[in-house]
Amino acid sequence: MERFTSAGLRAVLEKVAPAIAAGCVTVISVEAIRERSGDKWPRKREQVASFVERAFSRVSQPGDLMVSLNDAEFVSVQTSVSRTTSLGISAKILKEALAFFLGAAAREDLRLFQVTAFHNGALTVEPLDAGRILDNAEGAARPGARSSAPPADDLTWKVSRTWRLTSPPNLTLDLEMTPEPTWNVAARVVASFLLRPSMWLAVGDEPARPADDWDLPAVLAGEAAMNGIAYAAELIGKNKVQVALHAPLPLRAATYSTSRYDLLNLLRGLDNATRRLLILEITDLSAGFPRSRLTEVVSMVSPYCRAVLARAPSECADVRMWGGCGLSGVALDCRNLEADGRDVQRRLAIFAQRAKESSLACVGYDFLSSSLMLAAWAAGFTHLGGRALSEEITRPRSIARLQPADIFARGHRAAEFPQRSAA
Image (cartoon, rainbow, N blue to C red; front, side, top):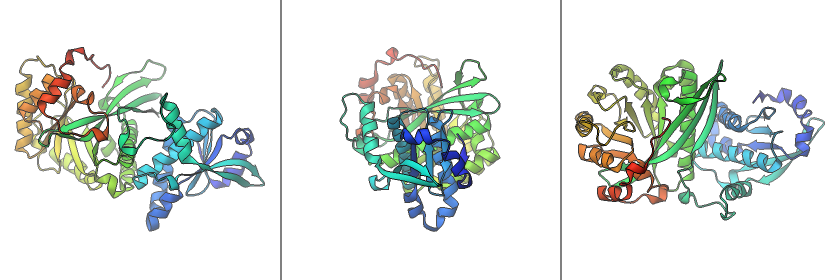
C-alpha cells in the first residue's frame, strides 16, 4: 500500500480507469473528525491519516492503492475485488476511524463517495449510503440474519479481529485478538473485557510458529500494541453498555523510541469517553524489572487511560516491588497452571497477598478450569477470567451478577477443554 500526495494524484488516477469503471474506487471522508477537532486538527490530522492507512493496509492486496486527496479525504483504489467488496471495505475503514477518534460512528457522519469518472484532473463522485452498505455487509456475514444492523448493545464480542504485520527483512506476524470477559469478584459482575492476543510468527518462508510478546522486535510489538488499542477504542465506541477494555501494551513498544512516538500520538488522539474505559496492561516484564523504570512507563501512558496494569511473568514473582509506581493492579496469565498441580493454590494465595500488601488489584486470566478459577477466588484475586466464564458471557449486555457457585455449575466441564496451541 502506497500513499500519494495530491501532486501525484493525476498520474495515479489516470492509470486506474478500469477500476473506476468497475466501481472499485471510492472517496473516504473523515470530515466529521476534522469538524469536531477544531484547532486541534493540524496536530491530529497525521494521526487520522496514519490510522486510515493502517486500516487499509491490513486488507489491501497487491495493486491496491490509498491516495491522499487532501487532509480529510482519501481515495481507495481496489483493483483485486468486486465493487460490493470494495464498498464494504471502504465503509468499514471509515466506520473504524470515526469510532476511534470520535467514540462513535454516527450514521450521518459516514461520508463515502463513489468515483464515477476522472477527467481533466477533476473527480466526478456520487454520494453513497455507507450505513446501508455496512448493514448489508454485516447481514451477509451471518446466514439468516436480518439485513438491518444489530443494536450496539447486542454485539457478539467473541468474534476475533485479525491482522497481518510485517517487519524487515523477513518477519511476518499474524495477530488475533479476542475479547474475553473479566469478573469483578467483589461486585460479582463482569465489568470489563480483556483483549487476549494470539500470535504466529514466520521468518522468511519458514512455517509460522506460536509466539508471544518476548519474541517480537520492537517495531512489531509497537504495531501490535497500536492495533489492539485501536480495536479497544472501536469496541468502546460501538458499545452502549459501560464496560472497560484491557489492551495489551508490550514493554518494548513503550520504551523503543520510534514505537513510543507513534504510540503516544495514538493515545493523545483518543477522546475522553474512550480514555475513561481503556485499561492498558504492560506485558513482557521480567521478574526483577526496576521499579524506577516501570514508574516512568506508567507515568507516560496513564494520562490517556482509566488504569494501568502490569502483567507478572509468573505466580512466583514478588509484585511488592512494583507498589507505589502508579499501577492500579497486577495481572497473571494462568493458562499454564494445572488444577491438580503441586502447591498451586498456595502460590496463588502468596501472589494475591503480595498484591494486596501493595494496594494493587490482582487479576488472573485464562484459567482453563472452573475449579482453578475458584481456587484463585479463594486465594484473594480481585478479578478473574477464563473459559468457564467466557462460555457464559459473550456480550456486553450479558453483564450480570454471578456467584462463584454459578461459575462452577456452568464451567465444571473443564476437562473437556483442549489446550490452546498458541499464546
